[in-house]
Image (cartoon, rainbow, N blue to C red; front, side, top):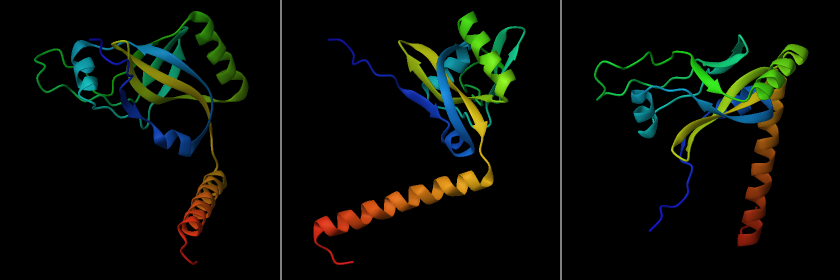
Length: 159
């Protein structure tokens, strides 16, 4: 019997959608050490505050918290160390051009396993202003209120 093909999500960066306008995204492999993989399989990671930087035509992920695996002996690395992302050269060059031309940043949005390998989805992002955040919250609240009113109407309750 074959196991179902699922991609278990380890961590999501919901704060990124609130703080940034997300654009184009890529799936990248991430270079990890053994205990980090075990910590991820236990479902422990945080992408909040993470960002990616291109150095020497390589892309590095900074600020992502993968806690130390408790059963590991001597090989535990720093929990917020920088980690190399695996992308094709053309993809890295494209991201570099977009960052330099339009003042965007790269943030991790989802960390998951695919075919037994850890992957991270990175997105180009532009920072939102305070009024943009309030506007987004107001739109979300308005749609929730209309859905509630519609549900009350369909159930026969009076408003």
